Image (cartoon, rainbow, N blue to C red; front, top):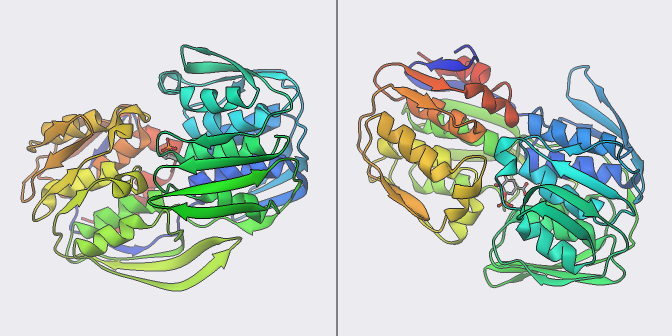
Length: 436
Ligand code: S3P
């Protein structure tokens, strides 16, 4: 499985071994941003190796934050915080493929007394930004965009607090408004309709910020007071559970699989996949549960077995938004199939993930029903190896490498190198774990 523009994946017998994942992407982004506006140094061990988190570091450097990558052994980033005031960038802030970088960092640059311009690659340039433009403008930032799409030209300054109910379930928007709330003159209140990943809240606390949180029905509410100073942290970032998802689903495909993943993120707002896989009949156990700066981490063991079906809707679809592509890719091999509803956000990710999944599954000969907000895939199907496309989307490349393990014959994935957006070592690691 050489990572090239065309990557070949052969059928496997099972998945066996132990793998430790690079640091979680969502946490790495937030730590890099918060360390930049903290006072004093931070040391982040096991920082994400993905290109997206490198984009965040690049933007922080352009905003005057100094940092260094220590390459011995672990992927360690040492960041010298500047405090809340960043430096006027001499260049555009290049967010690459990363929606997280653009959406969350826009909250921080909105609190700065200068103008900055954020841009991204072709895929990011198609993604909606009005979801952050609206609350940030309400707080007093001046934002120009291309009809709600990047590039964004943001003139920041002192902000007004906001009382904002986020209309869509989006952790990026929640973190963006929370970060902007640090620069507001008073207390902001941010509500979300469904509980999404809470790294913004947990990680702000790790940097010494006080905030109040409460659950409200299926959603939550956070209050944050502006003007709080952040202090640097020394921490180790837990392994990325959304990257682990590909190996967990690969292991799930074969009764003989045995996989161990130490130091994996177990934050309850991210671990819904583990419940779903257990409900589908997988044997899974967690040991050595620990807490590092508010984030749960544990060691996971999984054995392959029979896979029942699942229906994902409502809060589950929001909680599993990054894992749905790989669950859909293994759905034909389950007993009853998988149905997904309430997931139309998938259409505006790095690719239209509903369409990408449907097209690739059909190319492998699967029966699939496409819906506006999801898809329905019957179980007990046999798939053929095929020529597939990643659609320049890291999670599509990795999801179909997993499906290809159970197909009859070889599969070629075009543009599989896009896996490097979140997990550059994915194909090497899969090759190491897959017994053929
Ligand atoms: C993320 C939130 C999700 C997710 C993305 C990372 C985050 O996006 O899909 O990969 O770190 O907050 P949305 O906020 O658009 O749902």
